[in-house]
Amino acid sequence: MAENISFKERVKNTAILEANAYQKMYVENTYLIFSTQFKNSEYYILSAEQDNYLHLIGVNTDLSAKDFFKRCQLGTLKEDDFDFVKPHHDEKSVKGSVRRKINCLPKLKSLFYSSCLLFEEDFRNLLPHSSQMQYSSLFTLRSRKC
Image (cartoon, rainbow, N blue to C red):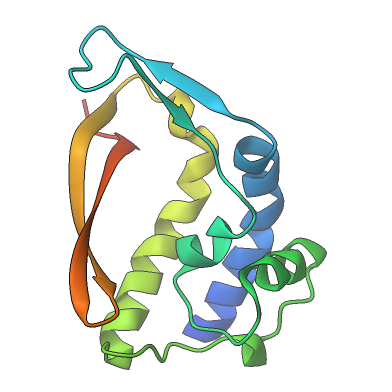
């Protein structure tokens, strides 16, 4: 019979399990992405830092982003190291966001193996910044169903 584990333990386990793959595929590599279909740029560079991993998980912590990642890599992350409490967000919405993120995290390893990639230029995402709102102008790269 399958053992029931808490959501927090599942988040911790996934963060630990995927940290080394993230390091190997994204921190240790830089990708040049180009297409004749691009309209705004001839190419884009995809790179990642260890500090980005905390954002990919989506939890709140008093640890620095680098320390969070190191604990994940070493397998020493504890459930007491993070929570789901973020300013201006209720815990339920944070948990929902984290749930979606940890479900997608294992798929990062096979992102470039998909024959159907969607690259979206001029992706706009509203980001809170102090008392004002700013837009981040980025791109997205994701697998899609063919």
